[in-house]
Image (cartoon, rainbow, N blue to C red; front, side):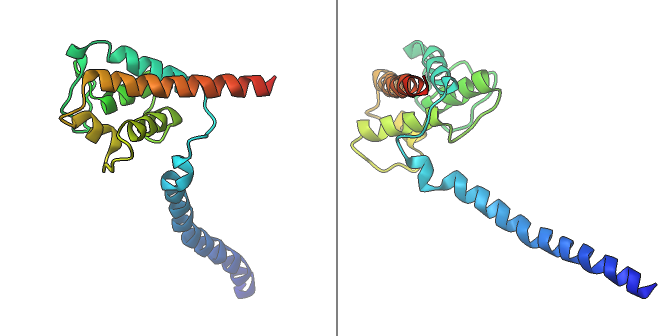
Length: 163
């Protein structure tokens, strides 16, 4: 009987130990993926959803009166004005049903901000750019337009290649 229990317990214990040791590694890998240099590549594949997110964010910020120039990165479902970040969050929720912080559409806006500010360092690119005293509503619209044009061009190129 002891031999039978031991033959069962050893594989079960090994499985438990493996799962216990691997879980933090998998979590660490997922975290590394979410913050890797890969996400900062400007040539990531785009989707129709990326284009729709940018178009929706542009609609959300359709006039100066809808722009919140004092972003805190806290966006509420009952908000009536939106910062650059919150317009993208809301657009992501509207298009995808969830917010994806590193979605290509949002990354493209971050890149447009970098280009517009000549690589100025920000802790939170979208919020900090939105909140700069020198940023105007036209600047916000411009980075959305630049990101939209880039995504549309890449999507068209991908579609041509796929034919």
